[in-house]
Image (cartoon, rainbow, N blue to C red; front, side, top):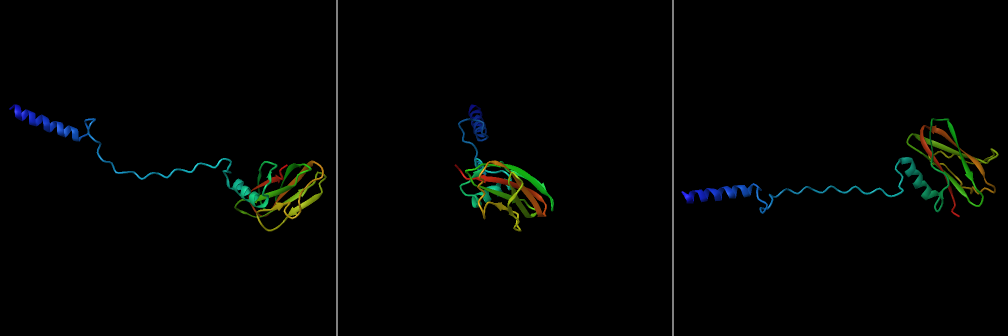
Length: 168
C-alpha cells in the first residue's frame, strides 16, 4: 500500500505543478499581443487648432524671418460684416498683416488705416487669405495705433488675423 500512496502523491504533485501552482514551473505560453503604435508627442509650440495652424503655414510662406507682433486676433463674421482690431506699429521695423479664413469663408478682405484714419493698404483679392505688406512694405515713420479692418466679402465663418514684424 505504501507504494500505491507514493504513486498517488507523485501523480498529485505532477497535476499541481502543471496548473502553475509552483513557483519553479514555467508559465504557460501566452499568444503575443501586437504592440500599439506610440502616439507621437506634440511638437512644442505647435498650434492646436486649424486657424492657428493655417496662420503658421501662411506666415512661414509670406513672412519668412518675421516674428509675431500681436496675438492672434480671432472673430466670426457673416457676409458683409466687418470687425476692427488695433495694432501698435513702431518705426524702425516693417510689418505684414496676414488673415486666414476657416471653412465657409470664400472671400476675406483686409484694410489698414493709420492713426489718423487714412487708408494705407487693402487686400481685396477673391480669396480667404488676405495679406497686407506683400506688394508694398508697411514701415511706419512714427509709432501709433493702426486700425486693421477685416471684411467678410463672401461667405461666413471664423477667421484669424495677425501682425508680423521684422526682427531687430
